[in-house]
Length: 186
Image 1: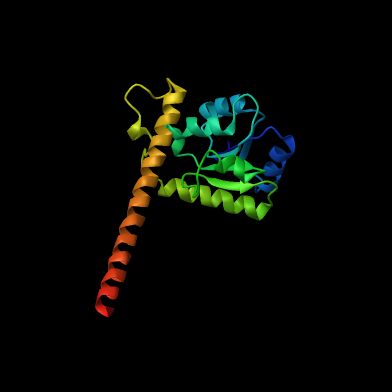
Image 2 (image 1 turned 60 degrees about the horizontal axis):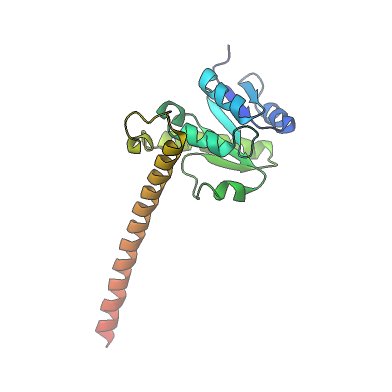
């Protein structure tokens, strides 16, 4: 039995087949889902080693699946590669840089797929433990999707604010240096 299960969630049979054919033979069991509902069910049933997720899907979008994965600590540990033919579809919902998953633009080649998988695995290893669930009130996990999505967005905003504050502090120091320099010259 193969220990490495890769779940490919894409409504295109061509993409699912392409991913399956690009992976090294015998090293992976490739599971396939043609829509978001089937994909989310397989995530919970099979606990894959990697998820390849199309962003635009029937029945349940890749965005909705992403939100579900991000609020469940056991699913956050699964490397995730989001696929789309149009990056702007993804960036309209999730700002760059993509910290918790890797993005690959369709169409892609074997080298690009391999690099995306390696990068997704690296990002999972570097991810702080349960960054999202810390902001979800007790009892809310899995109950109300809109509140979970809100908690995810709040945590992402907190992270952005902290990053911006660091940048502001650096600019303040640089400005103080410029003012000091100007005062010395005047």
